[in-house]
Length: 203
Image 1: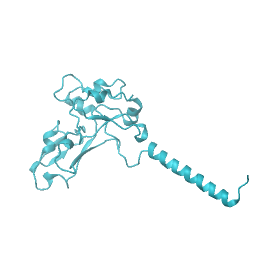
Image 2: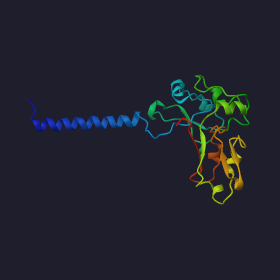
Image 3: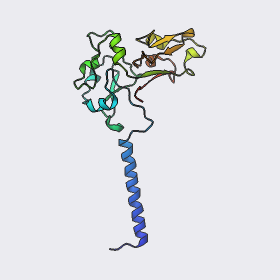
Image 4: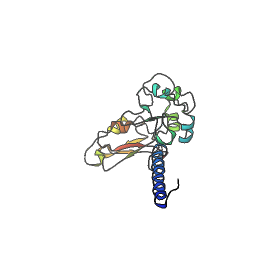
């Protein structure tokens, strides 16, 4: 059956809309937003692309974490990263296995694929090999920079005096060369919205 010009135009428009919507939905599922920061990864992780390719999604690191700081990304996370481990410091921070038995950070010891490189519980090795992220301070929100002494983040920092120092009124300063992004400062911050956040160094 032949189509007249009006019918042809209407059907073509319908097909175009269907294809366009379908492509848009696929983009939502598969393509990460340009402004979405990379997720925070466990200690000893490889570079992001290599990490995603090497991680076998076994969740042994998640199970091994004594502070339950690691969780898997949802399966439908864009960029093919679903099922890989991440952390949200506001909920639970990496304690760098302080007080735990053993020579190595538990998550790195549990990883069977090499996505996490083995890291000893040695301050020098931790500073060299752990780069979860970097703590960033908002001076407009920090109580100690706004006429009220706090210091909660400094007292929580496992590398206090190196990764973070304090001055008058317990005003904190983050030192990027020593901060490993464990998130203890973010977890401890009593301000809401919190004045200090850990952001990925891979952004």
